[in-house]
Amino acid sequence: MRAKWSKPIRMYWKLSEKLMVKHSDLLVCDSKNIERYIHEEYAQYHPHTIYISYGAESRESTLTDDDTKLTDWYAEKRVKPNQYYLVVGRFVPENNYEIMIREFMKSQSSRDFVLITNVSDKFLNELKAKTHFDSDSRIKFVGTVYDPELLMKIRENAYGYFHGHEVGGTNPSLLEALGATKLNLLLDVGFNKEVAESAALYWTKKSDSLAKLIDYADSLSSEEIDEMGVLAKQRIQDQYSWQFIASEYEQLFLG
Image (cartoon, rainbow, N blue to C red):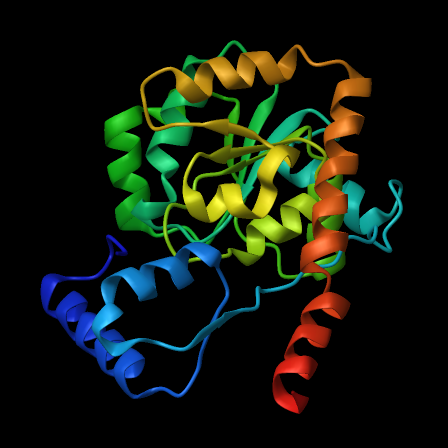
């Protein structure tokens, strides 16, 4: 389903998928939607499946707001706490960077759009030609952040988080966002909705959908945003904590 794969590679993956389902004793699915897909696509094999998701933390970063590691990063990237929307993810078409950039450019937000990603020059130049994002000073590609505590703190201090991932099951970056960022704006697809449920706001790929949602998000009170943050962290603690996931695997193996 990933747009980056050529047709021959997709055919190979499809065959691999089919054979794995046919010959496996048990398939552990990290997404309810993937589990449903397996049963619908390969009903003839009567697959034996179980759902156990990926996990995440919901604790706060060990860094303080005045830690030089954080303040130096903000100064270098010209970003201010609580004054940016954030996205973290692989720089590939199916994560819908083009739509997020286009819609943010249409929004009235005075905040920045900070993109933490491993930039591919080819894809970046394509986006630049299509969207002319370089004419909008709010849009900031800031490279990658591999320090987990720094990344967690950057997530915590984001005003909101965008998640445009469309395929791939339960996404680690979405779980990390729910565990750290109060306000999450997600693409309305089954993979994302099963994870966040009512703990996030949703947008579609239709024109103006995300732009209007950004303007709405900018109008929320601090109390409303805090409430969304409580719901998001609760989702992680209840269904996606590493303790919960580990216990699920323990039950499976010790059965």
